[in-house]
Length: 192
Image (cartoon, rainbow, N blue to C red; front, side):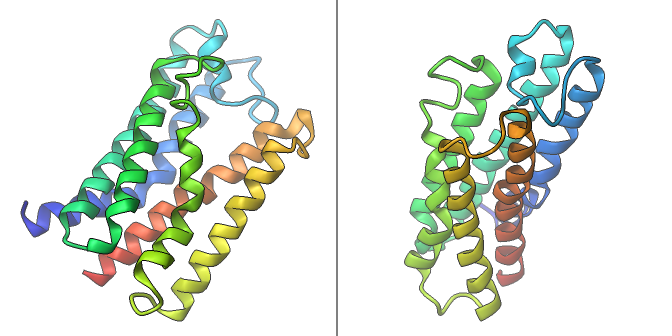
């Protein structure tokens, strides 16, 4: 694979937060009784919102595709230390594809929770690459993101977020998850 093609596969992930937020905001604004703060995006897929649910499927498909393309770029770039990360991101991309196909409540929605593996990616990157490949600022960013991801999932799974604000928690967590990958793509683009 050409180096320019690999760079494009990696660079496109810089737009991951937009792939998530734009369709979500469009879908939420098209539904009069949908609460952006109190309801999850996946709830649009199970409710009778007509074609609006297509926007959520587009969002999940776009995010999943971006993760798979990013993974291919990582695996084909020759960075041996990103092999496991590439596989984890492919699994996360597949879980996003499943979110576009299967409604919330189905075990296939989220591919049996395989997306939870994304929480280990920041620490795995440091473990596989060591401190030599990144600047001190980047290492601090990676550690901070990793801790924030663990904190976010702890709040989510322990149900410490108020029920009427649980979608807001998700909206605040999404830029962390997708923004982290976008930031990593940008850092790797600058390195190569």
